[in-house]
Image (cartoon, rainbow, N blue to C red):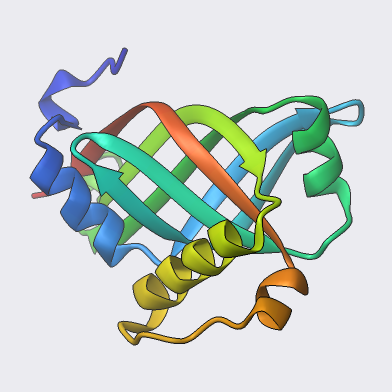
Length: 157
């Protein structure tokens, strides 16, 4: 539940626009060491209002170990940054737009799923289509996050 309802974005098209502008998504998870937050390049897809995020990773490390033990994650991405200047320090602010949410992660196992996810990631990052080979897909881990809930937020003049 967002406290500042005046800043909440619920329109799916506005949320899509923000996601399209963002190139880095912070993915947070928890393991035996505590909370772990990592910024990652990502790709995404919508099926109606269902949001899936795709990340690539090394095939080993803390991120994968954390996901294997606890599928629950949260995410945040932001863009449109600008300082709002004022006459007094307390009147300063900052413009931004963000999307944040919670979901469940899965480490994709099948090469075809990984190829599709990596294609979406590359499209989002570059605006170009790439042919992802089996060898490319098999050389990395690919994480898919299905958002269980998400919302947009903005602070604009």
